[in-house]
Amino acid sequence: MRLAYYPGCVAQESGKELDLATRWVAKKVGIELVEFPNFSCCGSGFIDEANPTLNVALNARNLAIAEKAGLDVLTVCSTCQGMLALANSRYTEPKIRERVEGALAQIGMTYSGRTHVTHLLQVLTDEIGAEAIRRQVVRPLTGLKVGAFYGCHLLRPADRLRSESAEEPHSFEDLISALGATPVFYRGRVMCCGFPILFVKEPTANRIAARQIEDAKSHGADAMATPCPLCHISLDAYQNKAEHELGHALDMPVFHLPQLVGLALGATAEELGLPRHLVSTDSALRKIGGVAVPA
Amino acid sequence: MAAATIDAPFEVYRFDPAKDPSPRYQRYSLSLPPHTPVLTALLKIRAELDPSLTLRYSCRSAICGSCAMLVNSKSRLACQTQIGPEIARHGRIVVDPMRNLPVLRDLVTEMRPFWSNYRRIEPHLIVDPERPMPVDKPTTMTPEQVARFEETPRCIACAACYSACPAVEADPAFPGPMALAKLYRFVVDPRDAATKQRLVKIQPGGLWLCLRCHLCTEACPKGVRPSERIMDLKELALQAQGATEAGSRHALAFKDNIRERGILNELRLVRQTSGYGGILAQLPQGIRLVRKKPEIRKTPKEIQGREEVEKLYEILDPEEHS
Ligand code: FES
Image: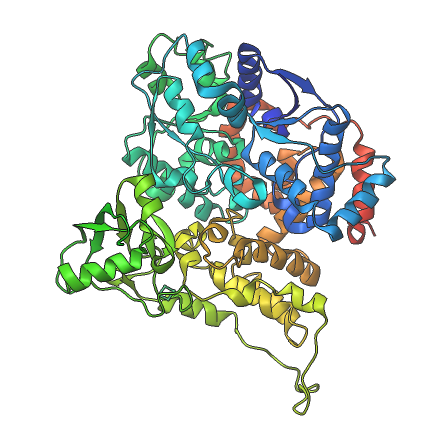
């Protein structure tokens, strides 16, 4: 399977471990990642706030690049996934399409509106299939209870994104089961992580993150896992702030989706960039057993 | 012929603050046709099993907006939610009062916080006294003007969006999805003379606390799509006033940031949004992050074809270019 790899900004910068883990897993399960150094940022929802037409145009340019190469786009970020899919949806509105097509023409590009955008979670569960992943597991994550945290833009608005049932998704939990771990169902799994206002009103954002982590914990989760590096920032990098708002410790390891897959498929903690997390993942690694805990 | 019935185990939140030390769930076993609305089932419980069950309803037809509650933890109209799909998915039906509003008794919530947030946005036409509306003939609007508020008049003020909103839950400064969707309705009304003042007032009034999570759009039984109306409001507020708040500054800073290299410059974004003071405030956290993630300090490499991105900005974002 060949896909146009759209890593998004964060996986190339502070969330580099997501890129590391994605490459490791892609190789293992047979996804060829075709790279495009001319992909731009998806706007992360912020450009959509400031100028929605520009936001559609930036993403239509990205989608046009993949279309020209004859490839579907693979994202590893719920927000990138949402923004690219939203651009496809908005591109069907005649007024927007006219302006965006006109602008693309001026940079010598055309876009049909038909590039398919898919997230790694969907490729693993829909294309490759949880069963096929299960057969590749060499280190079952037995005994580890994992709370999936989907990230809003992978799910909603469901009609625009044509995502799986936004209210009761289960692909991530299916995958967690296939890896040998036990999925934990909790209300917060489809809620917001607070990231969009982390730099607007930090304590509020921290309280929102705290709420979801605490929810996962109270349902017995040993760890959380997310297909979105922005959620990862809220849940992992700012977990100390969430704890501060809450007034007590959470100590919740948070994996990126491909890190969890990589662990079950035999990768080392270093290969997956686990030492880069702010909240240590050691407690989860010990539960799994058979994986060297980084010094 | 009577329709086939299914077993419908209910767990209903019960709480009378005047009497009960804490809330509890009461179980009821019913057998009903799968198309039965949750509201009908609750009324049957009240009529036949437990007259003390307290709930609010009127029209039973998804019009009055009084029966919003949580059905299997989702904010919904009880009269519009059938038991069959709920049982198929969850094996039972757990009913709770709405979130983000105090419970008066059982499934009935105090609606005052919801309504006072609504009143905050002055939900009525404000007409210019210099240009009063004609009394002898109707005012006219173009189809394009009407199209801008196609969705918002459908709102039945049921508060399902308010109950579903994580920003309402975390911050009392946020007026909630319904109030903002209604605000949008007046902002785009060509008869309203207070558009600019409304937009200026709502910026510090919580507009930028919307998380874009679209949980309100998911919850809305009428397709108002509040989260998308809030996005429209943000754009209009920026056009009316520029960046005056942390939220609007962040949106504009992000847009400018991407223009420079086509890819996000993380460190620069913090400075653009919060100024050097912001960097200072973020310093302890920043040091923690940089220790684990040293690339935060580096300037990312410009994307190939950045001039194409620049051109798109020039064409579609011209005011910023001048
Ligand atoms: S009873 Fe009127 S909306 Fe449900």
